[in-house]
Length: 359
Image: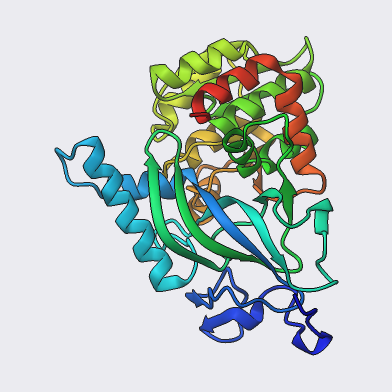
């Protein structure tokens, strides 16, 4: 490969690939250039698997007509994803505004500015740590849709910008499992920062991958004087939370029913509200259950991409709830290593996630 010159240098944030509207960043753009022809500060990846954001995947599934078979649902999801990528040049769900991340192998480094970034070499298996909602993506073929994993095996290409973080998949972890863990890597490290010894913590959506990881971290941080309350919607999710063994109590309930969830939480928290609520629910309308369950002066951490931050802010105001609202950032320095180490060192967590995401 002839080395590209510095004159081929493009925006480190990918602004040069924005087609519509001009002048915005790729995530805010309606359409971006997904051409596999890369500049000297870009990386070309052969894509193997897309891990679709849970809120986005559920929204797409919700558009399936009643009575569809599993096979028909898979085809429906496939068509929806292909349609979004064809129109937008990226996997950016126009309803939820979210994307996901991908697993693939490095085909080509554009030049010395990105050569062997993150210790990766040509041919290495990597997982992107930046949203598909801003990643130039081209899909040639969909090989399989996993309805129970929010994952899709594809053949295609993607482009990583100079500033886009990614991680080399470690050889001791299954690639599909690593992809699922890294997809939510921002949640456990942010939980570790927020939880203090002795805190009363509520995890909403505790049976999903981010919820399980946050519950595990929260229990370690609260210590014996604290309490972790896990809330799950289905019995299947609640059973996963019980198997993890990190929650002091596991509750089942619909987090869109704010007052009933608040009453349930207080009944299992000595009549009081929690210091911190962590929202990992992948459906909309759960903001107020988190806010009403949290004491004045407490914090609510919204990791879910189904969150309406307008609903959260105005809802807290309307309820007279003096709580700090924390927006979940999918990136934190060291989050990939932190998440992978959590799975490595917690055998029960690893076993549950492996059952959920390995084939």
